[in-house]
Image (cartoon, rainbow, N blue to C red; front, side, top):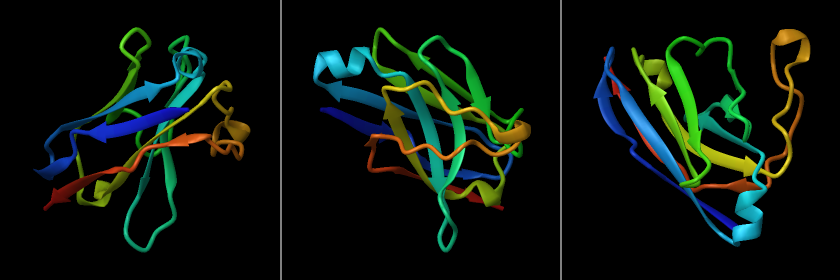
Length: 132
């Protein structure tokens, strides 16, 4: 019902910036009721991890280790989601995935990790590579 397509990945040197974007398309009714949208990433040999989430009303939450360097934003009129990444480090190298769901974004457990949450819609990913 909803397709997510990421773009904007690429290669950058450490300390640089990149902006990745995600465009949602498909059944208008489903897109209108998209609640939570977010970014995940997965590095080779590592588990997928949440990066940042944003609700339709603009409230955001970030992985503690990334807060301050990454900024998530969305445009409900254009059905797009962005992630601005600054001061990139080699350890930020990963495939970045866009995800969306009709529900409200999950809360954090004691301010740390997020409660388990299965996003319904996923993109195919865009590669971000940071060289030292």
